Every structure is written in C-alpha cells, then in structure tokens.
Image (cartoon, rainbow, N blue to C red; front, side, top):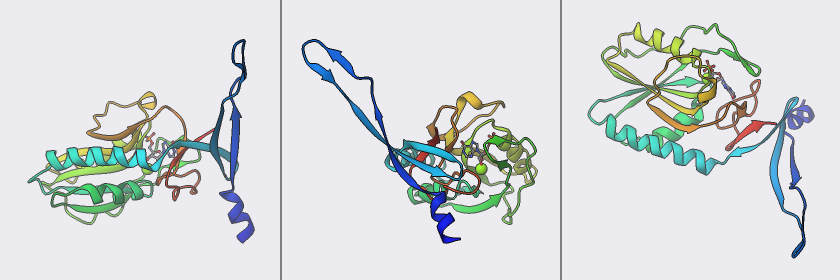
Length: 211
Ligand code: IMP
Ligand code: MG
C-alpha cells in the first residue's frame, strides 16, 4: 500500500499565466503566478494561507486571552481531531495558569456538514464553575458549536468562551457569539493545519483551499 499512500498527497506546481497585455509603449507584458497545488484523494487544493499568517492570528488571540482570562484559571477544551494543531500552537502562546483537555465529537463527512452532532466524549474533568474556553478548528454553519455549547452547559461551567482558528461568516446559520477568531475566511472548503478532507491533510502546515 506504500505506492497508493504516496499518491494521496501527490504534489505538483501549477503555473497560472495572467492575461497577456499588449501595451503600445512597452511591448508584451506577461506576469506569472506560481501557486502550489496538491491532490488529496480525488480533489485538488491550492495554497491559501501560509503558516506564518495562521500563527500571527493565533498569537493575536492568545494575547487577548492572556489579558481577558488573567486570574480566572481557565480550562481550555479542545475539540479533536481538527483542533489539535491550533490547540498546540495556542497553548504555547498562553502565559496565564490554565489547563487543557480534549474532547471528541466527529460530525463531518466529506465536504458537506451534517446536522446531527454526536455526543461529547472524553470530558473527564469537572468544569463546574470554571471559566471554559472551547477551542475549535472552524465554525462553518455553526451547528456543531451550538450543539457543543448546549452540552457544555449541562456540566454547569462558570462561563464559556469560544475560540476558533477559522470562521466562515458567509456560511453561518446560527446565532453565535465567537469570542476569539484567529482568521476569517470565505465560504471555501479548506484543509491543513488540523483540518481534513476525508481524514487526510491534517498534517499540512499551511492551509489549502479546494479548487
Ligand atoms: P459546522 O457545524 O457547519 O459549523 O461545521 C463544523 C465542523 O465541520 C468543523 O468542526 C469541521 O470539522 C468541519 N468543517 C467545516 N468546514 C470545513 C472545511 O472547510 N474543511 C474541513 N472541515 C470543515
Ligand atoms: Mg471539527
């Protein structure tokens, strides 16, 4: 199976040539953009957001948290699998005393969001009376987050804040207040930095969007 595995993440470069312009004084002007394109299973994705830009966004929200949550002894609740990379980077920038724990609620298959969210698994710590920060990879329709919030409230936390790496405002279908958003993106399907297409692409250090 080695051969087929390497094909799943096959890389190639795409050369896009912008419209050639005929300019009377300067002759023919050609500008060329080279964008990295990768294939994951049956789909092509192009480079969208570089690691450096992602991590600037994470640093920015971490500083806000360091100011907002000082003295609150927060517990970060990161949602697996998608938020693992975001949570790791975020926690390196959080300087106040805090805990982190991980929960799981797989609800997404292929490239469309499903509405029925599974229960929250793995919340072993008591969050009663605590300041909770939910750490998510992406808020798309917001259905997952609304359902997660409802379930968190049954554990009677003191207060709950939401931190998301990515937010697609154009896709939002729920009334939701997001406290910390590292990056807002258009309504494209993306992979990388923890996010997957059918299980693959989570390990990419940059974010790619589906072509
Ligand atoms: P929502 O319930 O529609 O907000 O979707 C939230 C979940 O869908 C996220 O936690 C992701 O797991 C998944 N998801 C939404 N958009 C994308 C995407 O563009 N790429 C990969 N996963 C996504
Ligand atoms: Mg997720």
